[in-house]
Length: 315
Image (cartoon, rainbow, N blue to C red; front, side, top):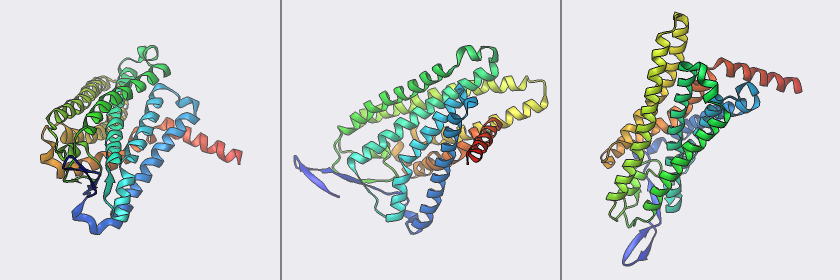
């Protein structure tokens, strides 16, 4: 641990990310597995973004929200996975203090904005399915961009204030973070300052983000399910439930893991379990999201075929 003297104390200049100590001998295998998952997620989400903006038929509020979601998923996993890959490959687990704060901020900022965005996407589907006659008058491209801006503006305000408070804490050792990235809960626990007010603020902000988006999402999908049950055709009901069930699987994974991690005032008691739960959000769901949200969509399939046909024709 490198330190500098400040008033007879030592200030931590870097932290050690204790990723998975029990599996250190599997570094090569873990590197390959996480690299493949990372590349699959990046490629799947990039295809969604490119197809949405290449085909004018997909330039609707629903697909604008989906492509934004895909872009944010790429950014979200990039805040964590590249550093984890370097740990598996090189075995070097240290991270400088400024880089640690930066990683923690972008992880929370992008993650919280994405939860707000999922709530907006649920509302969009609610309007399209339950209020089809009013959908066009309520949702348009201007409104969708405004809602996206609002989602990430709220997230930025919440977590910039939190990170400013964390940056003012003193860290004088130990410097081992029992996680595979700079988890803010673990980081706060290492401070030698009084962290009670920061922990309360952190718990309040994360609870507000998760519960607000969860309530909106549950309300929207509950109304969607009721509307689907009223459809006269059994085939239409089966098709609609097939789509909704896929979405709900991903939502359950994301909300379930985050509720387990963040809606617990004494997060330190669960640090080992938090690592496994965080893997769900940083590895599992980013791979599933492109398949479930868009790549199973027939309209996207058609747009992809048309785009590939145009590319072949130009050659």
